[in-house]
Image (cartoon, rainbow, N blue to C red; front, side, top):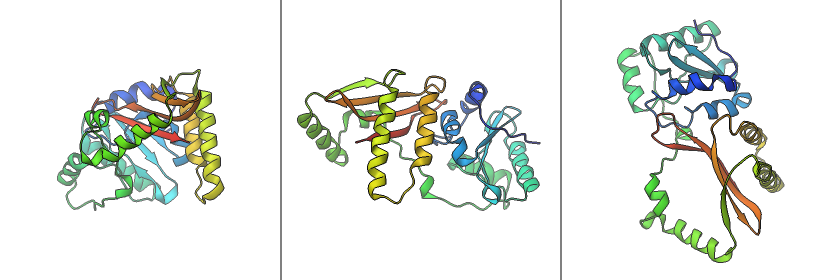
Length: 240
């Protein structure tokens, strides 16, 4: 039986331990992402033996994460199926990358249908490519940076700390106001997630940086490393 609960900061150590074994580079599989978006997506988490499982969504739209951790993967998936059945919903599992797809197909032959949703795909960049911006494909980005430095000779970079977090929130509020002037999209959910991230920035182990021009913050980015150590996940980026 799976016992789900709302994620709390105190859950981070055991969740991180499970996520060290995640054979995936999905941004969904970080504790920070789960925690800051919990209210918006009605996310709940469960510790089943040595697995982390997340359930999110409302009523018949509920979905589950893969069981991430160590142990009997098939047993953990079967528990997801039983939990979904008890709630009268289909056992939808998201974030199934190629390695896990093979595991599911082998253990549950003919029991699941599989659909690729490009809307949930992540952009993955190699560190050396982002550092050097070498190659023709990144030529426009090099030009963009060159022009920025030329037009803003007094620009500066600094790490995000508790001292400059208020300025980052102020920048986001400005960005939000500009979007609301001409957009029908609702960015309030994202802003609430951003505020939760900043309120718990150190406890979540987030890392970020900002850029100043004329002494004012004009851009920021923040995120966290995957516990597997395979990549860094950029959760939020804003600029005005």
